[in-house]
Image 1: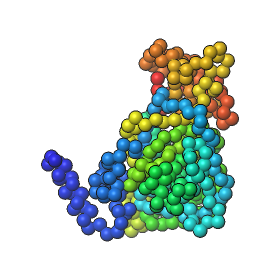
Image 2: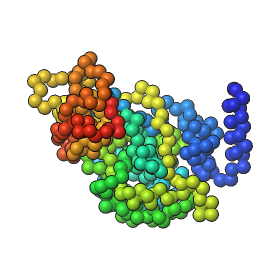
Image 3: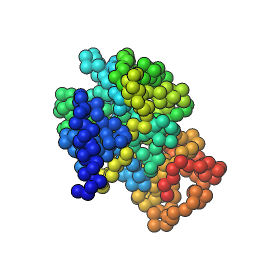
Image 4: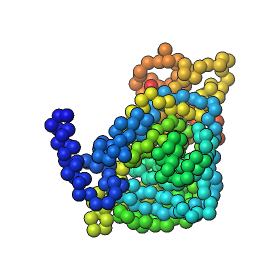
Length: 372
């Protein structure tokens, strides 16, 4: 061990020796209590540093695998009540334990029924960062993560998060703008009630299914929780459309603080764990390339040979996170400038049909991300 590493470990030991309270109060998203040190200090969190199936990850659009057996995702339409709390690391909504009706999540890539338990809010202090998952290294202003536990095998979240197939994570990318979700205001209107660490506010009759984007297109992979202890027991589902909040709501969210009213410390935002290596994991999708991108073709082409994904913002009539771009076969494809893009792009709308639109590049628009 070199002198630098020894110094850091010594500093860490000194800094945590006098901690009063639990480990849950110690960790943060920066400094010597940040993500790079989560697994070094607490042995129970060793997967944060040693795990090879960690989350979040960067999604490479041209490496997605279409799986025809992926089903639609089912959410019970019950309303739930719970507590919105500023934990000092994140804004978290947790369902009341004695709720009469629970929301079950099933279908999709899930082999079991999962009971919705909590929501985590990740966001940046500026619009160019905030989400934990990335699409072709593109980040969104925020990411809302819904967690549920496997109710068929386990009794609660505490037990399930340590066990195989224990939890499901539903990722909703957040964009700032219209159209905002009016049902989401039940939560956003309470942002100013939870400004400081430890503050909480009750939320009644939240229609969870109404918060989801209007799409059944998604990406899925097996990973971990994105907060300590980084347990590799999660099935992740990332919807292919974002949800929207207004500029005023995002401003209110960015006023939340890590500390108490007496010692507010820093803002709560920028609470995103860095992306983790994929380590040969497969990211699957239920988007049918053949059906949606090659209507009228005389052949039955191989989707890997004839099309690829591209993550492009600003496609007219589409707000999909991932869109399909029809181009030459892989063996003929070259790395080109944006001016060489094909004149039309096939993108998906809410009905699952395809929409042909003019290439935004031809009109002078600048993409946030482009994968060729």
